[in-house]
Image (tube, rainbow, N blue to C red; front, top):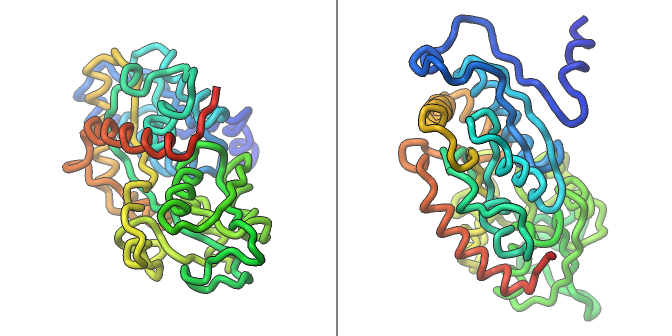
Length: 330
């Protein structure tokens, strides 16, 4: 019976995060009217991506706080644009949630000539959830043991992978090339898993991969970490040395960040309930530990929760890097 129930909870890219047992939480009682039905959390990337992993950790906790089930709906494609456009075009009533991220809120605005949404106009930023470092990884059995060893051989360019054109990993690779003056060639793959496996198998020389996507292969001994973009080593990878410490400053600005967004015009009551629930969830020690173990750095909701100014700064930063990369998608 249990197996049948689990099978029923996953269908066509959607998963139902069920509400736990017990009475209605304080937030629901205080709000009275919101939420009165299940919510849908749209993930604009494939299952197993850093975005997806994060939402599946947080959604059950948010559902418990709000007193309703949360349906996780994966809508991947076009660098996250399909899923985010679906959120932007949904009814602004608080029942459709989106996961804003570096790519969907900052990069895509500069990358796509015909983006079907405007990150600054069509969304309201509710709370920053977490960030995660990119890690510079190479094949564990390859010749590069340190960052200094990562050099072209036989006059060839270094090949680096990413989950696709215009992703944070692609643009971080461009920044790496321009900073080190090393000749590189970008090889885009269909998603994070494919990009990471390309490194592990030796198809490419390196990647600046998101930590949650690469962590399993690192722990399995298939990838070697030569550096991380964060200034401090992630909790899940304490042995990592920052690129800044190795003479490559500025990569901390390329960290991937995530936050809850809703369509513009969402009622204050709904937005406040979502914010309060998120702050309570981020304040739980067991949740923070789960996030850290998965490769994320949980946000401090007291200092980082209002992240709209941060989003605007990131839009400007990534626009410059997209221009430098010469990346553009119709």
